[in-house]
Length: 403
Ligand SMILES: Cc1cc2nc3c(=O)[nH]c(=O)nc-3n(C[C@H](O)[C@H](O)[C@H](O)COP(=O)(O)OP(=O)(O)OC[C@H]3O[C@@H](n4cnc5c(N)ncnc54)[C@H](O)[C@@H]3O)c2cc1C
Image 1 (cartoon, rainbow, N blue to C red):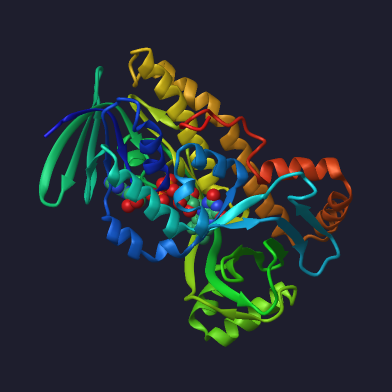
Image 2 (image 1 turned 90 degrees about the vertical axis):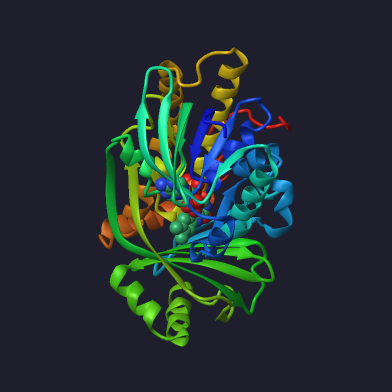
């Protein structure tokens, strides 16, 4: 069995698997360590969440030859409607007005996660699965990684370790990277609803005194609901009957889509912002949710994670072609410096959105109401918002065959 790899990736979720696929044709020796089998991941209730993918994300997935396998399972977002419950202010963004074919897409997390896992399985990438990382020690020339696969202990070395093992990252802990946790005291309630009126590819984002509510257009005239409530409300909405849940949902959302009925079970995801204080350590880097777990209100988590993947792949491919050390501290520092700006901007945008729209303070409510009204009449301001919503405000790194 091979024991040394150029790159060892811990975590075969979207971030880890997309990175492996971005590097797979480079000649690098790559291995992925994943704790759960594909069957377990597919069956996990976590897969029930819907992901809103920015247009920039879809371009990157396309360049990595991932999108073509899931495009028929995705629904285009052609319009976004943002409103504030109990206030006049609202704004609408339209792909057509912006000269775009769409503002993004909605896809079930399970569909895209399973597809990338399938592509990795078909490739020459080595997989340790189900296996867990239990120890990490960085040395001068390589990083040493111990894992448990079934009852076996395996010791591996690599030029670079990539932690892509999610919000509760073991790699982050083993590397002693401190983290900052902000508990929003909120839970996201996720479900799929059917509506009596057609959604016409419109995504709705509605800010309410109880928390933000999003309805994202999905296949078969269904919409994916992401409803954020405080823990207590969420618990009572989960334990109450379906009729009570639908009545309260309809009260919050109104009748823009007619009468709503449940098309799935309800799931609850407690929310917190987890931010690692550093993205890098000696011969190691953390990406995706391992580096930043965001509130889903703005649908930015995976979009941000994929930009980590693309940037890391770009600098690693370049370094490998130049036959330079993949764990060079200067290279890792360069990566972290490039990514920091995007992290700060995206995390700040999401955090501010929650704070501004959860405030009951009258002056703030008036300001955001005026803001939404003004935005609706200012084409240049809308252009800026669209650029952020579609991920086009960022410089997209060059990866994959189609670029
Ligand atoms: C309700 C909700 C709605 C969301 N909506 C959106 C949205 O609309 N748009 C968007 O862009 N994002 C959204 N997100 C965020 C998005 O789901 C995440 O950002 C993304 O899935 C994170 O991917 P990841 O690969 O970084 O981490 P994960 O998906 O957590 O993957 C980590 C992997 O590592 C494995 N692992 C963990 N520990 C170990 C270990 N010790 N050893 C080996 N393997 C290990 C796990 O089994 C897992 O497979 C949403 C999230 C939630 C909760």
